[in-house]
Image (cartoon, rainbow, N blue to C red):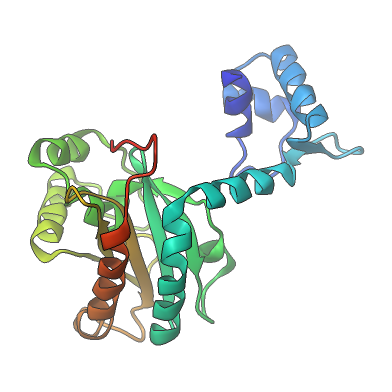
Length: 252
């Protein structure tokens, strides 16, 4: 089962269709084992196979799994009306991110008119330290756990301005802990300003955050803090009181 899941995880935004040889190389299994796994997953409806090219790609079954997840996660249903209201009020891109080990994953994305397709797709997983959502959440950790995250969690560069120095990231997280929000510019996309406020649970910790992205051509930091931060915080705080850790969910 673990090998089959590893094969499924080989598919992402950079690998939307894969041959057996490509799958074998990505998952580190020999071609014979990869062929058996891929064929089983195809027969079980988890992978589609092109009859001509014989290349594999994810099937509609993945959407069924996403459907099941959405119904099982109480945060998504509770937060969505508030996120819609925030999106309509701001007219900007609004996201709901949850912590997923040492990454964040977008579980709700409400685009604006200028949003590119890639920024509308749920399920994108990004190293937490690279994002304002992740930093806002990490800032609520106890000091020892916060330091462990800063020292060991993965880093990835997305633009020439992405901060990958751990000491500088530590200062950014400390600032987020003092301010109650995280702000950054040009980290994921050049020309993008991002701000996030944590959704804090009853124990004072956060495993989710509300995030807003805007263009630096239309906003500067001062305007973001004046116009967006207050309503972003209000939205996060309005979700927090009824937030409960889902059964089986553990913090990193």
